[in-house]
Length: 302
Image (tube, rainbow, N blue to C red; front, top):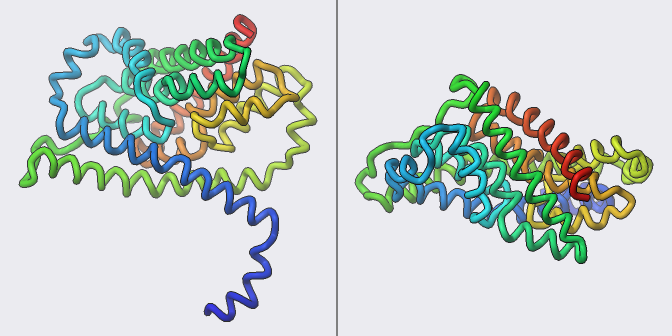
């Protein structure tokens, strides 16, 4: 098989498009995996070591009041969107209201200090872009949480359940078991999302982007869609947005707001964690809110 592969298959593996595909696939996985592991560890720690009563004291009892508090709390967790999914699932399993956990899920990868500093470095001399990203992302997270609190159903988002006991290994045994389970489960969906992102990176011609850069509304929609397809980590997407010099600041803002909340690897992770019924409703809601708020924030702040 090695000999056949060397002389029959190897010549076909040097195609530039295939090399680009492999590079993007590996880059997405390598970029996201450390943060996924971090999120899984944090989720397992929440499950094993934090008593459910803590969350009833830390968050307001009413979901509508808990949503903005959870959204602002996302600012203290450095990580990308891959980390936010298992953490949000762990919060729900420990009694946090789903709307508040979803607000945290959306806000955490978009407004944490690492992302904001990266945005300031990518856009030197443009503090308005940092302010606009923070305000728009937090507004989307809070609005999505409030809308889910009003119209969401437990049939669409069953609350993840974790074993109440700690088993023979105690709390540390529960921590290890939860971490291994979540990492194996979410890791497979991360690979699926990376495969889709790499394929679309190769399929979409760059000339199409330059052709629409000068059309105001269309350029915003195109960069929002591009953010979904490229699946770039939220701590690196600002540098990609800054390189798209042909596009308007509002279009770049849409790229920065949509990417950490709706992308292919995130959709795959959410599907594996919360189910298809949830994704079919929550992803379009988040995407529409992110684009609409980006238009408003771009007009007001940029």
